Length: 383
Image (cartoon, rainbow, N blue to C red; front, top):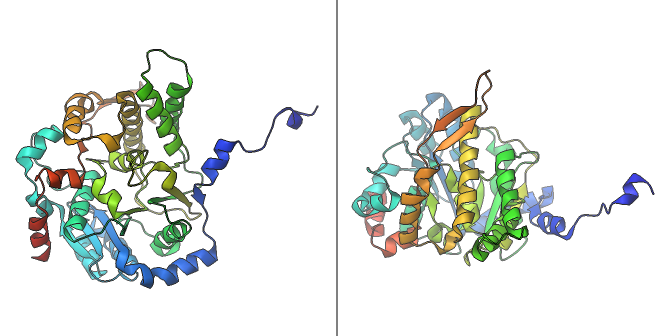
């Protein structure tokens, strides 16, 4: 028996299941998606979190705004200014986008009631993290009358090659394949990360091992999370489309955990469901601002820690209410603060003590609790 005969090299049923969630759009599908944009435009929105402070990025920001505004109707492309320099704000407007200030949108929030839920002492201002920026954008969408079946495209302001990437066309071509897709995310071949992959593998261990001390709820959630995230090549990817129902009903996180929160929230939520997520292969490398190795380490270690903690808590995020989120912010989140980094220089491992992100209830939950005043948000936007 030869070496290759000793093993069954056919893809396992699980691998086939994961492959079925990946879509590689053909040139014909991309062309069709482009031609269908005018038909779909009344359902499409685009939001762009923007906190870039380098004036040299103004041309990049203008190109990103033009890419979107040339494909969507006027008033449907929103750049959320979370502390950008005036040159970049002007560039977004010149590209055809509406620019809204995060801090102004936040004026319509009752921070006296929200801060205790977040376990924060003061209202976030300016460059307070991408999660808060996205949160403000979703509040604006709700105030503008976004419907549950609308499609919301999110991207970054600092990507230099949107025309080449064609993320909107790629995602829409995947969306058109099935009627029940609720979430489509762009993924680049070859992108991987050992920390988050190890954290995902740990979820499967909790499910598979016969450990009497692991509660059944933890085991089931661990299995659901593994099945949901194992095919995901980049948990913090900022290029995706979701439905309006997802936008209104998902919880947030205050920083880079927000993209992971969206992915893991979809594990069981009826508005999405992990079986209805598609990962869209993109052969083009996304040219955006490069993170330092330290920043990358901190982001992805934080994601891995949070992923483990969510599973051990045993309650899927779609079941969290403001009371439970308060408990998590006061109990679990402050403890996830020490992150080791093996630096490039010689010497011992560095230990970073960071202020962890906070979890934020959904827009719907906060509106129901009268913590957000959507009528006031609408007046702010109109004014």
